Length: 442
Image (cartoon, rainbow, N blue to C red; front, side, top):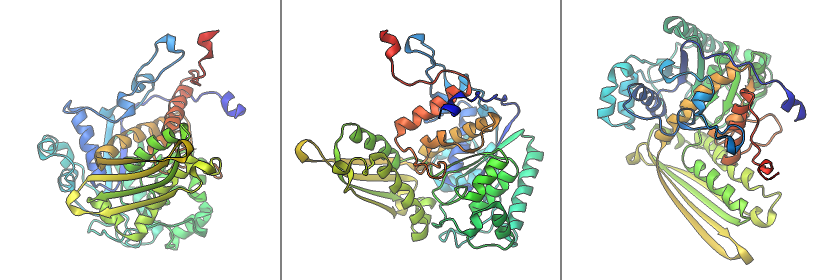
């Protein structure tokens, strides 16, 4: 820790030129994100929910009154400089896909028709053994998984050439893949590349996209809960090629609520005996998660936060016997308007029981879109700061944050935000904020 604290802050390169945003999966989240960016560019809407666009950061003492906006404090890419491309199994352009997703109202989309219609998905890498409830016609020609990886790299080169971007970021906004654990092909980059050539069934489409990005020095963020860069092979590739990675699973609705409430209960040493969570969701994500294999990936992600926050091994009397259950129910009439319902059984002084009930009627893609924006801009910033490998400071955005091997993830959203902002201060050589506050009383 002392060595890390003494390292020189990185030499931040400026955000010169345009930034390419490459997205596998052009469904509800992606189209809501891109349409939102185009609306902000035209002053039709505000980027509500985005730290990079709206949040401030305190610098120095409270009495210094230095609180610039984050995007004034740091050399982030400008919204006007973002250029989009993506892949999808369906060949609808971004406008038609947004209409089909049904998240945004048609009058708004009609104002954005021209830029959205220009964005047409490239043929996708897809494998029905990893996503069982979807299929479509817009697929790459059959070949080995190495052929697919090389084809994605060709897509990236062509996009860089035709768009004139100076840098790129890739962020997965596609469907949740079936639950897998690391296999022998994931242990070294040599084994992984051999697995690509042999079309090893343990290598997923998302890992093919990630491999292609990392080989070309493009940062990769995983917005879904499945296994992608969290394998020894791709972790090493990200470090060898000096590329930032982060993930996984956007923290939008129910888990966002958990990471707000659980730290509060723990801070007051109130016990928890049970936490039952159920979700009703009708969009394409809900349909995919109706498959048990894909749900298993999501379940592991959604279950992990509570135990890490409550730390039952340290507080067995309060949290040693929590019954925690998560359910996701596909309900087509609900569309993208997700309902997250939680029943929390707690106990207080002398063991007396109490209950908390939460019914969060949220809009899944509306909550996810600003997270995509922030992650794109922060990953590009990390790349220009010379940072590589896992970017744990971006845990704020994820249900199952990636960490160094053997290190438990931090799920408390308030600690995550403190870590994020302190990393931004460190990048600019500003003193870190400890909140000790003794200097005001000397």
